[in-house]
Amino acid sequence: MDTMRSLLSAAVESQPGGQSLLGSIKIAVLPIAKVFTMCFLGFLMASKYVNILPANGRKLLNGLVFSLLLPCLIFSQLGQAVTLQKMLEWWFIPVNVVLGSISGSLIGLVVASIVRPPYPFFKFTIIQIGIGNIGNVPLVLISALCRGQSNPFGDSDKCSTDGTAYISFGQWVGAIILYTYVFNMLAPPPEGTFDIDHESLPLKSAAKSDGSPEQVPLLTEKEAVSTEPNVSKTQKIKHFLAILYEKLKLKQILQPPIIASILAMVLGAVPLFKRLIFTPDAPLFFFTDSCMILGEAMIPCILLALGGNLVDGPGSSKLGYRTTAAIIVGRLVLVPPAGLGIVMLADKLGFLPPGDKMFRFVLLLQHSMPTSVLAGAVANLRGCGREAAAMLFWVHVFAVFSMAGWIILYLNILF
Image 1 (cartoon, rainbow, N blue to C red):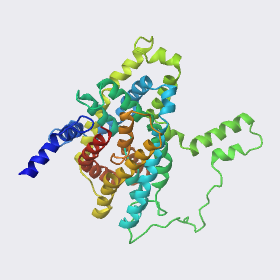
Image 2: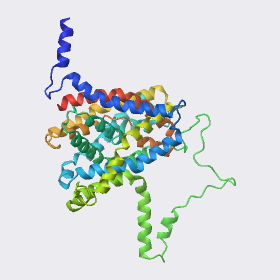
Image 3: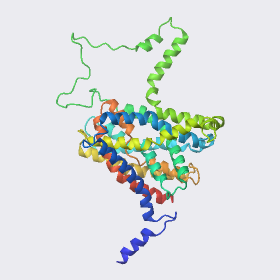
Image 4: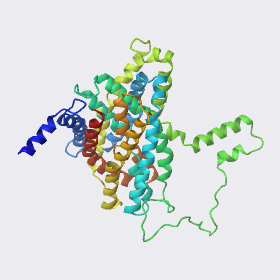
């Protein structure tokens, strides 16, 4: 009986930051509960009983979020919060994204070496563990956390603006990682496809019907044109830039959210443009205000679409239970402690802005999220979308519980 009383008293006793343990649990769990509720409504709308959000509708909704609503949110929030001085202070955010991808991939390599996933999903397993969602899900959590008046970060508007700005500032690095490192790691195996029938493996290179070997051009058409002697210097430069654009995959990197982040950083860092566009009495503030109105629709739309995507279930995956469980444990249990160590070390070394707890909280969230949805999109592009969809389903289901636990720990560390 005395033990029970001591546990109850410890639960209601104030922590150093003024929050009781039960208060910390409430602050951490309520945002997850809001996310779960909106996802459930999306699931219900997509179910066969209601069927308001069929697959085509969810695809259009995802496109609307990615192409318009998310860029509007990033542009309005990041542009208002950023200055040149703040960009210099926030340098560790993109570094944290890179370090998180490296540490997560190393953990994924260890897990994949132990579990030995079925061929050809070794690199796929590393990516599913190593690359987390640093954009959509953290934005949702910050929005839900800051909405409450009792949030530990103070003023709701400042909490939301700062949190969104910090998250948006790291997204451009995440996009580069996705469309370079992840794109190459998820390349199809030598057989040319992930759908391999081990009893009858396809030949690596098919011969022509006449028996002669297939002729592969040494230069592409664009590259061959640039080597012709009669081509002018201007045309050569244009062809070189076109080849560079294609080789660096800039089209995949320069997605609408990344363009919005770059524009917000450039315009927000120049005082003249900031006074023209982002201050409330600016002559062009109507554009920023319009972006803010559209950006507010991003959170509910993306959660409805995410919940609707879960209606199809995990699908048919070739990964097996052992690999699936290993990816879930690796991403949600093993990666966050490594991230906590990175952030705590950076704080000890003086790399982080002093006294900014939201800054530290966002850094910690970047290591604690489920697998990146955009990594699933890249996997679909490379031919292993079915397995990626199955993993996104299971990782997001278990992330509801893991994120609540990690947020409780982070709030107790910070406060």
